[in-house]
Image (cartoon, rainbow, N blue to C red; front, side, top):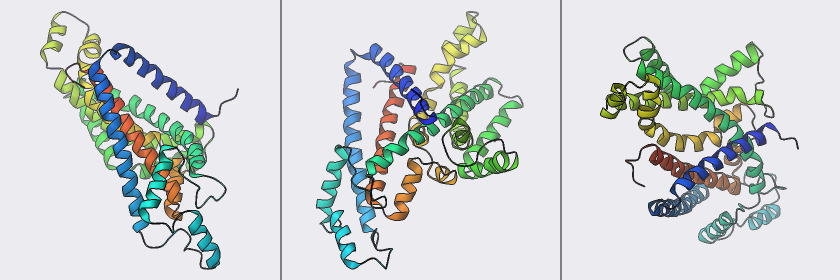
Length: 337
């Protein structure tokens, strides 16, 4: 069976997550604190989704105008039928409860802009694309950011340390859509090495994924550097050095696990953001992911599609935060769940 690039990357990332969670679960399956922690966090996620959905629903309905008011040539009878079909003539509380019930059935309702498709179908088609792009961006961020932070910490006082800190500051300050513009101009239009728009092969994903990864890589570099500078002078690290262990073993076994805690905690919400794609970058590169659909929904006042995207973003951010806290507790045994 042939798998496209988005589906292949999504399958790979899903497999890695399942393996990681199964290993964690095998170690902690008899832990009552883990069960209580997961119950609390899942309950908090459930409540968060409801609150965010209610706020988004109220904000969209509070904006003057409606999704069918942009066409002045539309027949009033047709407009009234469309308003009735999508339930816009019902009281807000009734419409919200109906929409919320659809969320728990994974049915966000029919799209108002794409009349022949449901919002669930549109988002379901866009999610693998955004997930593939985000997975590649997360890979770039980790591969660039973590080693940079390690080098900056272990070479403190040498020329490479201020260089890495300066570059990471620039990476945090410059918006990723500006980085994407420069990359597309240089490597797309200038050198013609990579395509500038569309999505379907790994070559289409490199430029937008690299632009997405830079702010996250910069933050990881600074967090890892700071964590190592805190861990390296500690007694257990100095004891490991005194025993004659190699510097590499001291770094990887004794210092790095404790230093990675803040970085892992940051990766949780950052991963949720980049795995669902960037709103601006997806639109710039004409990538048919969730970000592009969300922008389209906002422009067209497509309530079901926008609410569906908000719910998915909220759920992913909450779940990735849970995974990050579990990984942080696994790295640092001093942390209690």
